[in-house]
Amino acid sequence: MNDEMKIKFWGVRGSYPTPGAGTIKYGGNTSCVEIRAGERTIILDAGTGIIPLGRELAKRAAQEKRPIEVLLLFSHLHHDHTQGFPFFVPAYIPNARLHIFGPGGTPETVKHVLEHNQSAETFPLSLREMASSKNIESVRESQVIVWDEDGVHFAELGSRLSPDAVVIRIHKSYAHPGGVYIYRITWRDKSVVYATDTEGYVGMDRRLVAFARDADVLIHDAQYSEEHYRGSMVGFPSTQGYGHSTAIMASEVAASAETSELILFHHDPAYTDDMVAAQESSAQKLFPDSRAAYEGMEIKLTISRHCEEGALPDEAISLNVTGIASGTPALAGGAREVQVRPRNDGSL
Ligand SMILES: [Zn+2]
Ligand SMILES: [Zn+2]
Image (cartoon, rainbow, N blue to C red):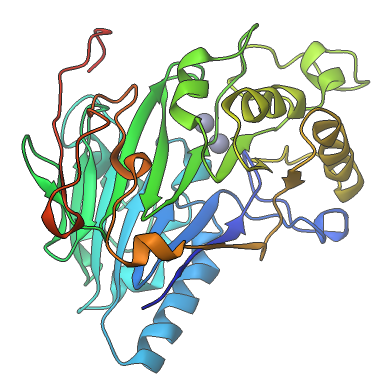
């Protein structure tokens, strides 16, 4: 059995793509991260980084002689997180299956935005003309997405999780214009938290710290330097309130949540490689296990032996701010019961 969870960065830039000599080291594509949990592929956001990823997935499927099936999660629907989707090759392949989730006021919101991005005035091909089968849904923070032997579905009251299930929990952050979803993807005993497009609070975002607690990898927005954020960088106005963090804010969250590693993400498009490297250095002063994401960066998390034997650790389904109960005793065969509780903070 495959015993690694793999993370690969295909686009690490915020706002707009920035090709050119100044961005060769870290790359210029907008947000897209691939997570492979055994045979399953989860994609975080569809910035322009999803374009080369799509070609790679098509090649991989041809080599392995099996159809593409991916789960695509949108953090939110700003264009730097959706603009690559019309060029995502698997979406045009008839036997490919795409499970697409993201935030929105109605169950149809994500679909409407993707349709609008490919309306006759804006793109030559409509969403419907993309031949893959697509399930597109807006999800609520209280929902838990599960990908297991039965396919992709939501965890339901009293449902059981198999030890091999990929479990995706959602934290809705209000620290970005329009709000943003932060995802925690857990497979066996490993967890990755994807927290892009979020601004740090004074004294930190305590709900985010709780959500990211003990994650193996925290991918966190770190668009700005302190000087830029505060408006003391020549030629750049203050960006306070724009919905993005500094490297210091990101490292404070990582330190407080005691994550194993911090990956700085969503680099400002105006920053050269040297400026991004400086961001990395400033984060490392507070949280030594910090690195700036770059295109092509890969992280491999080795699954521990006891999980392979079927015992599901508490962490895999521990319920935190999203509302699933932790500490449920192990069931026969390593499965556990999941209880979904209503949220108590009033959010949808
Ligand atoms: Zn963004
Ligand atoms: Zn945004």
